[in-house]
Image 1 (cartoon, one colour):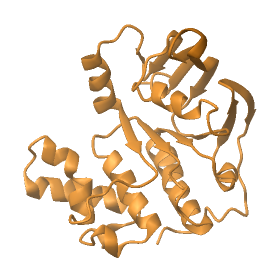
Image 2 (cartoon, rainbow, N blue to C red):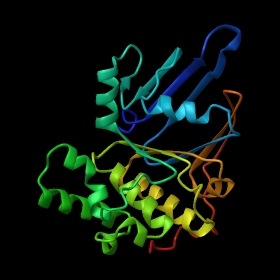
Image 3 (cartoon, rainbow, N blue to C red):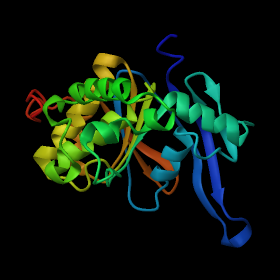
Image 4 (cartoon, helix red, strand yellow):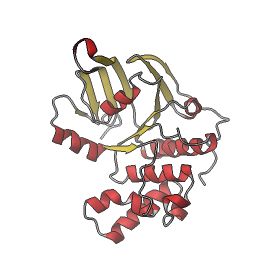
Length: 244
């Protein structure tokens, strides 16, 4: 499949919450392309529509007007079952608060998608440990969340999102609960996934520190894209530091 086929294309997307005078026009005609191999940041104030846009890009919602195409598949007219299949096949989600089970080890948390599918424990552990190594946590596989730093817990969540080998990673405020240095390490993990594995990575963030760490950023206000910047490569950002 070509890089173009694995892009996310949003074309004049509009979405309303509610109807009539009490309804909210959350997105007013947003268009963008998120390409494999790059980290795209979507920023904007609260209520601007950026989380709604992420939901469209993740096949969690379908636009009322316009079109969203994910890895060559349009969400327009898709059934709930078809959207669920698209999410499972193509998309990995990462959230602000990690959503890890405190009684499970790092590898057991990463392996949850395989456990749901009935994969045997030995195979699940091997695959989970491989993914933890990809995000720099090979030596933390048997640690529980309480024994990990905030950045390490977030990278465990990233590894779990990769378990189904998605083409797309969507992250909602992944650095909001982290300090600057730890947040930079998490963004570097996303950058490595984009560059080395040619994945689409989209981050929604309020964190202004992230902007200099990504390849491209767009700003949304009142449901419209009002600016775009990039590519940005800050030599002083510390991205060359190895993950620890």
